[in-house]
Amino acid sequence: MKTRACWLPIPLLLLLLAGSSHAATTGALTQELARSRHKERGVVSVWWLPVEYWLAAAGELKQQAEEIDTVRKLFRNYLIIAVLDASLDPEGKLHPATHADIGPRIEIRRNGTRVEILRDIDPRVARRVAELSYLLKTSLGVLGPGLRIFFLPNINDKGRPLLHGSSNGTLTIRYEQAEDEDPLEYLWHAPLTSVAGPIRCPEGGEELEAHFKFCPWHGVKARGE
Image (cartoon, rainbow, N blue to C red):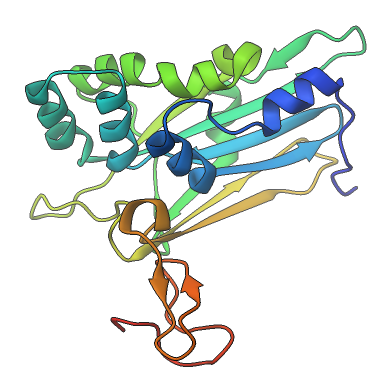
């Protein structure tokens, strides 16, 4: 059975669809990073949260320069995603899925290679995420407490990050729902336009997404390719 359009009270639906009310930096990032699908009386939303998001959040929360530098150094080692899987029961009570519910049903591929969720992470990162996720959770209103964050490794054997918002790459997430619903698939292409800025078609001057290799209107290579 295919996933059907959801039914949600209008105020709750608006909360789910609204963009971040915070400054443009995190607002632009979350608009590009969020992926949402409606289901029967609920929603599944997934965010890729690269190091650039956390740096923007730290800046908007007025953290000191040394704290922001610590975020840069620590978070580059991790691929971080957030998942909200929330359903309404017939009485209108909200039921967000837990980490234990979501973990076994999610498959993550970075640049085509499957990556497993980490069980242990640097406690300094866990503490910072708890602080910096405030902006994202607040933007979700009553749904914020249902946001679940997962950590995956993101460095190669030489200690270099494999995927971030300004690098070339892809992130794919497959999420298995209930037995009678189709799996959901989400895809991100990097570099992110909100991080690297748009590029322009060298022939027509049209503004293109940062990850575009070719102009879809003229078929020519994008600038810089």
